[in-house]
Image (cartoon, rainbow, N blue to C red; front, side):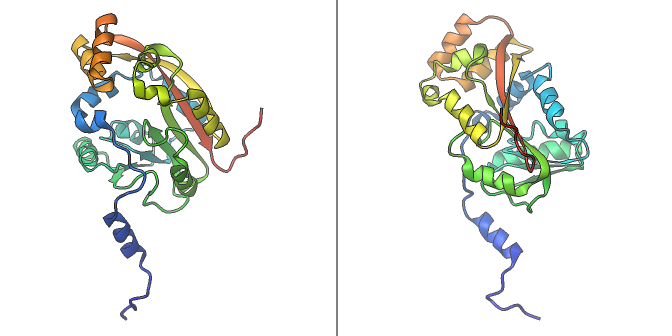
Length: 260
């Protein structure tokens, strides 16, 4: 039996959607232009594991389906797959996505999938994931409402979304980033109020960067800051570590939020 031309095919619709530019895609010059160096940066972040410990205290991903939105080269996929039932990495940047696939294949991570998509267009069924992890990816406050609608769609009732951003008030990194002209447009208090209105709770996590070599520290500073700012930081700051703070926003779907 041949379907008529007016029939709707979910597979055909998905293929047609993928042929169009993905909505809500932001460039990430540090990881996209310097993937090897960004790997070094990830290895230096939060050596005490304070952020992951805070996330586990809110919602465990053991035996759950985890969605990593804006997964980049897949650095955190091995972390989640150790406990999760399955991990889905969504990354719109093709070279980064291929690196994530190489990581999955090289480590033989059998419970991990890597796919195209964006925060505003997740090619997943409704109510299909338990945990969402989005770290420095798309969700930066006002303007990400369409992505939040997609999270609302794909997260199961009782599931939890974690959104991780910089803390612009605390730590060496926050002090340095205030020197960058573009960062002065960011109003941290407005951003926090936005997340509160969206039903997210917030935790501030103080941690650090800790490098093995001074050269690694200097190279990472070089991709995170404009040339003049980076040179000043390198000149002023000695050693292999610096203090670094996170804002951890989290929301459990289908559970009423307590008003304080």
